[in-house]
Every structure is written in C-alpha cells, then in structure tokens.
Length: 52
Image (cartoon, rainbow, N blue to C red; front, side, top):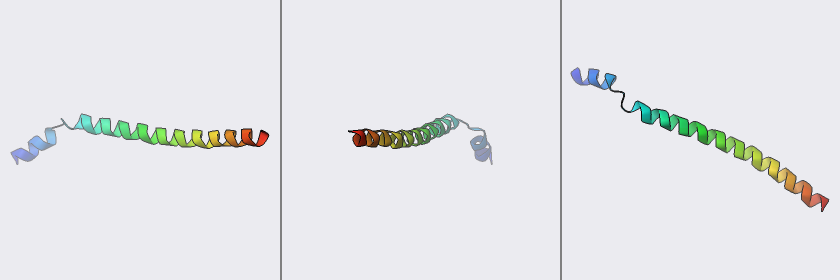
C-alpha cells in the first residue's frame, strides 16, 4: 500500500510526458503546414510551367 501511495505522488515523469506531447503537437502542425505549402507550391510551378 505504501508503494502505491508513493507511486501516485511521484510526478518526476510528468515533465517528460509534457515535452513529448509538445513535440507531438509541433510535429502535427509542421506536417499540416508543409502539406499545405507543398500543394500551393506545386500549383505555382504548374502555372509557371504552363505560362512558359
């Protein structure tokens, strides 16, 4: 029972979990933004190629 109480009070791993969640959120945002930029860039290149 004492081990369980210590385990519930121990929050030393909380920071690692928080950093992991922040990194995952940044990764999702980066993938979304890069996908949008890639689509727009492809459209620009297609327009330039057609104009040439």
